[in-house]
Image (cartoon, rainbow, N blue to C red; front, side, top):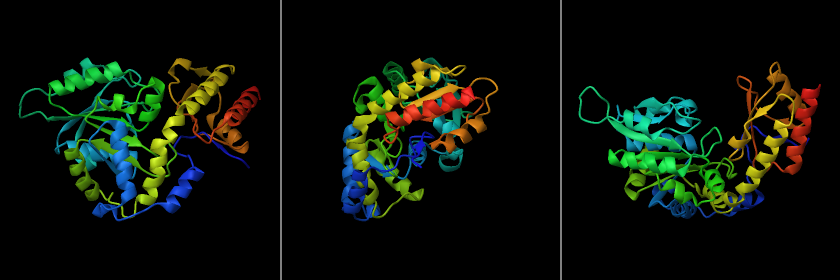
Length: 342
């Protein structure tokens, strides 16, 4: 059976070019700093993001937690959105690894009002208070929305005013840049450090990068080793990462267009609710009609070669990526139409 996998953009298989690059990669021991392919990837990422340096890490979760550990002192407070990935999907790592307290801001679908951030920054030296060590933002947000650059700029300005660094969870930063029609560095400029994932829509099999100042990356390199992230002949992973960064980032508009086609088709189905204005990138969120059995739907799709995660509280997400073509979108819509009709 030919499968269509819409569960996430993390399910992407490496492209044929990536597989060849892995086989032919020039390697060395990266803990010693002598893997030329890793060094090339880190230099390319730093240039793309407008930062002094970058560091190759195993995953996006690892990269975010590494940033918290490197920016903060134990007991510091980190300000971030109540619906962000670090809060919801990183296993409480901030408490265990960096030993920090998370102070959340109620976001408006991923947008943290700068005034709400300002009210949470600890000003003064009251001995009862934790120190505000970091502000974390996310773009594109894990809900699929792209945060306006004006909001990021205002957040960065108030952070500088109080001497607090900003970290950007940019797991899908290139999707955000594609939507905004800007270079990735135009988004990254509003943060001191940024994490990008290579293994989501960019299709690399493994890996993320953390970028920032040369001093920050030097400290992060030591902390990466502490966290168990020092890798040896990592060039076999960095080689497909270079293709992800340089080539796959340039084709994301295709995924976005297919997501919009999928969203429009779903919105035309009786009882299915889709906010078409919220389909900014490759993620389509929709609400099923009342009474629809989500488990039965996912089982029905699976029988027809379509993998999808079941809905949560009636809300379902489908993700497009390089292995989802126009035919796969139409096949998915036909299966959804048949299930709802039956």
